[in-house]
Image (cartoon, rainbow, N blue to C red; front, top):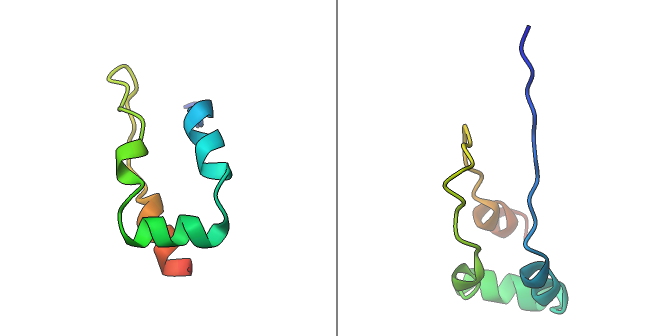
Length: 62
């Protein structure tokens, strides 16, 4: 029997900055790859079996 745990970590200051934007501002910034510098650094202590490209998912839906 195995146990799988999914943990979502949020950098609160960066999320707050993102939430100050309108949807259109977020969409435009993502299309111009202007938000990539705001990504938090990866934590080497955490192991993840896969990555999700949230930016690509967002742009597919916008």
